[in-house]
Amino acid sequence: NLQYVCFYKSSLGFANTSDEGWLRSMFAHKVDARKDAHSNLLSKKETSNLYKIQFHNVKPECMEAYNKMSDEVQRELHRDADYPCEVIGSWNTWYGEQDQAVHLWRYSGGYPALTECLRKLNSNMAYLAFRKERSKMLISRHNQLLLEFSFWNEPVPRSGPNIYELRTYQLVPGTMIEWGNNWARAIKYRQENNEAVGGFFTQIGELYVVHHLWAYKDLQSRQETRNTAWLKEGWDVNVHYTMPLIQKMESRIMIPMEHSPLQ
Image (cartoon, rainbow, N blue to C red; front, side, top):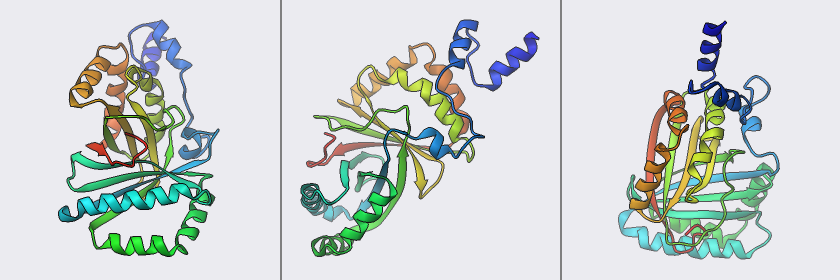
């Protein structure tokens, strides 16, 4: 009956704007949480990429030396084809946690590539010397292993100047599939200005964490782009249904380091 249909539509998270809109959303990218682990359901099948994000809290007086040394080491690693890894982007936090460096790495080949890279680095004397020197500059550090959402853009180098926003969401455990189903529809509203860089979720480290990476020309462009999204029919509905899934959220505005492929 009509009452059941209305309840069914509401429980699936669809807007009650029109029957046509509701029927279209029935055929949007959706996954079933009961069939497989969410890492298999939500990640890209055509690639076997694994990502690592690093957060380094640097002593303020060491930031310049840290950036210079990171630049030299990353350039050296990129020259060596034997390492199945690459830096996607490196940044210093501008607004958010201060005196922080953020690095995003991609391992082409998944966990075997990560293991092979670590094995080679542990026998690389120059890299071991770099780590020892770097440890003197850091207050703390942590990292996470990530997979990329299947419906998000693939991170590719871009020219600048840009600022980057890393929006981090700590989700309620058990809600990753629902988050993915909503954002599979929502991402189309955020492509107009080429602002979408990449979307990831954690596999190791803090779990049920999502990272969305955006690029803007400046803070004013960020504000205008985000305001424009609210004028598009459907964006507000996706925000409405994802907000209850969030336990905690954080925004970092970041400036690319000189050697970062994402400028």
